[in-house]
Length: 54
Image (cartoon, rainbow, N blue to C red; front, side, top):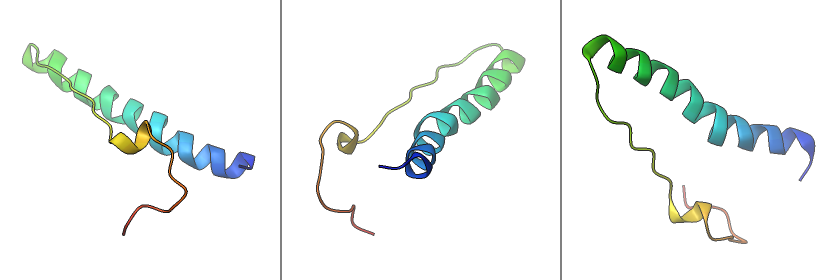
């Protein structure tokens, strides 16, 4: 995997969650609390040699 492909994966998987959390936490602080549950698919744990179905 080249650096550009790695950056796309990290921007989606890490930066995407971070961007959501920033807004979720701000909303929770304004409203007095809440819960954040981040989930991922099984695809994050098991390697596959085929592309995900569209």
